[in-house]
Length: 358
Image (cartoon, rainbow, N blue to C red; front, top):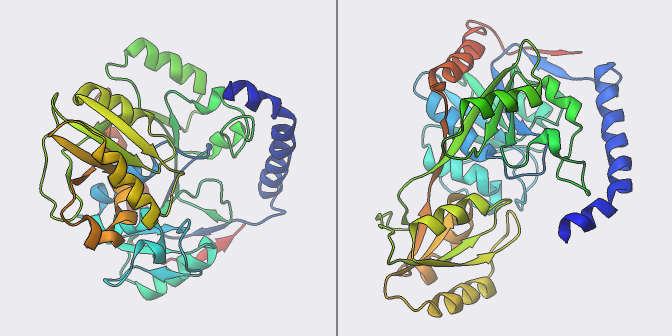
């Protein structure tokens, strides 16, 4: 029913698509200018509105790079209550920088986590404040063409491939399909377990990568949940009843995972990046009490967890557990992907981060 309704919005999608196409054309013709930096900048993004796994991919890159290079992330800081450029500190909260940057800040103590709406302005500020920085990862910046990254990683979800999608509001695309040509690496994320070589080849044929583009495939891996505050682990099994609390773009993979792991689960779903209120807290506790099992927990995502931490007094002794998520590369291509990342950084060795506009 929803899909049929969205098709009715196709005329509006054509108008939106025309505006996006015109903007891209103006960048392609240098009517609108892009700036490139003589410095390693890796961009992670997608063509869709969300749910492709950008946050765990950014974390994957941080884990890959931070032991070899002094690494920073730069995000817009979506739904934060502040404006302008900022670098996370010990006093920072999710309301200051946004939930995803706050997640990076908590998980990676060595990482410089910065936010700024205008990346063209924020990058020089970041390098001024942290001159020791050796590589910057731009989170969710593929469609923001004022900065030309040294390496562009485009994510597309296996079950909602951009080649089969429509522009919003009829579909989920916020950029035209042709923009995929700007990517250096295309990653098909959230693939089904046991993806065959035949299907891999069929998907690559559908994507039609350019000669300079590499296509990879990843699946989602969930790790052992841990308590929101004590960090103590919990085991989930066939006797566990679970209340899933999430405000993410696409909870379907997590729901499918829970269906195979626990006795039963219920869900309270909120909008992506939802800021939890005291009323939400009451709803969560009320819904949790309805679960019949003695072995019951509340489960939430890492992104949601940073927005629940402000209720420490209310939830300290409550069984709220956080489930980590990460990408795993298929077809034995983990090292190949890492090689592309390291090569993109190493080619800027001994360079100075001057900007060039063109």
